[in-house]
Image (tube, rainbow, N blue to C red; front, side):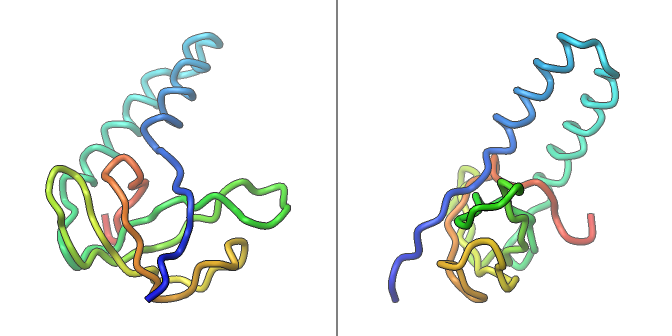
Length: 115
């Protein structure tokens, strides 16, 4: 099997940047804290068999910088590291295909199906 190249969004870094920008503008920091707590909570529920939402950097020229797709976890490597299978048909990431193996960390998880 050929190793597929992809770049994942770092949700932790994205959150820190949004939070910093929010502190500068003073726009509802409590709501951002609530969203962050929700993200941490759903990450704690991740198990083999869970479907998680990951953001993939787009490979085609577009006004959208990420394609958010579901990945079903097949292995828990420990310490917040996982392997899963892509469970979507990508439209903005042509090098990715349904069923491709994806390696990722907890910091990449934006959502968990059903949570």
